[in-house]
Structures are given as C-alpha cells and as structure tokens.
Length: 114
Length: 112
Picture 1: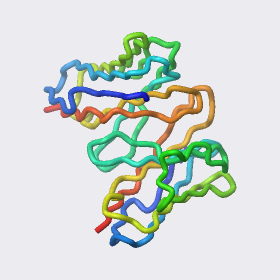
Picture 2: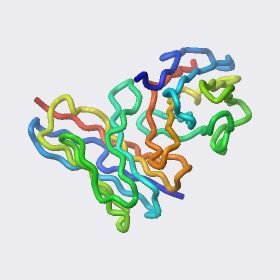
Picture 3: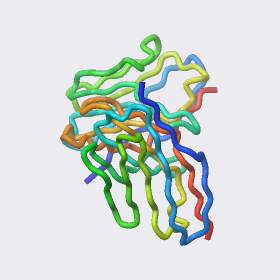
Picture 4: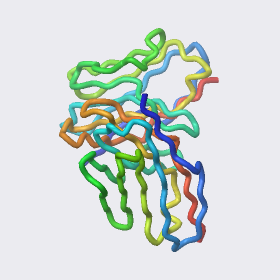
C-alpha cells in the first residue's frame, strides 16, 4: 500500500515569491492534515480536512497561506508571498477517521526562503 | 492548552543497552497518545498508538506505557541497535477529532 505522497521534496525560493506544496493521502483516508515543523521542534497543525471541508484552520496564517482539497482526495498548500520565516518542513498526514485515528505522515517538503 | 514535554532533548547510549524515553503532558484528559520516529530529513513513522483506556502497547523491541493520571508516557527500547538512532516524538490527542500536540522530540544516538 502506498503511503502519503508529497511533492516537491525540496524547494528553494526567494522571499516574496509564491510556492505550492502537493499532498496525496493514503487511499481511503478521509482526514488530511498539514503540519509545519521548524528545526528542533515538533510538528504544529496548520489545517485539517474532513473530506473536502476544512474543519480546523485556526493555526493557518490566512493572510499569506491558503489550502484546498478539491474532491476530498489530494490537497495543495500555498504560500503567497513567502517570507524568510516560512523556511521549514511542511508535512502532510492522513488518517482513516476510525476510532483510533492513527495518523500517517508523508516525507515532507523542505522549504528554504532566501 | 495541552503541552507536551520530552526530556532530555538528546541521549547517547552504547549498543545493546535497554533504554527509556520519557514524555509528559499537562492535560490528562487525552483521547490517545502516539509515538513517532523521525530520521534526519524524513517524515514521521508511527511506532505505537495507545488509546486512553490502555496501559501499554508493544511492537517488537518497543514497549510504550501510558499513565494518564500522572500525565506520563514512556517508550522502552530493548537491546538498542545503531539503527535505532533517530529522533523520537511523542504526541497526544485530546479528542477524537482534535489535532495532535507534539513534544520537541528526543534525539537518540546508539553507539556501536
């Protein structure tokens, strides 16, 4: 069974440029999460989707960040414009929505903003 | 607000040693707790998930325990190997549909 797929794995951009990350969850997983992980820190939730609905986006900086999950399968996270402080690893995870709700993570996208 | 603490931040042990990694959380009303492993430059791999009604879970050389009343969990690694070198993160969920709150992780180095 394929795991959570993310692309690109690495991205280097200059500040003020836009950037987008893509995630394809495990087949059949209706819940999708985007996390941000700074160096030496644990991941922090940005947004959670139940199917195509964003049910928790309280931690998403909406002035520059946006996300979508059309058709309730894969998802895109966008930053426009990027700032130096956005350099981090962006992780996508999914879960089956069962009582256990075990989350499975993708390899992440490492963003460097110059 | 739930806070998760993992101390120490780093640990170095010789190969073959049995070791315990600690995790503490401030709000004991958790739904479940999950231990992850993260290798450098990689995503997170789920190791064990303990439901709030459970006391422990085992997988191979790994055993995770949960004491909700004291707000603690431990990850026991038996007969450590160099391949166990990684960062181990603990995360708790406070409700069935709530987010995971992570600790900062413990970076383990197992010396040959």
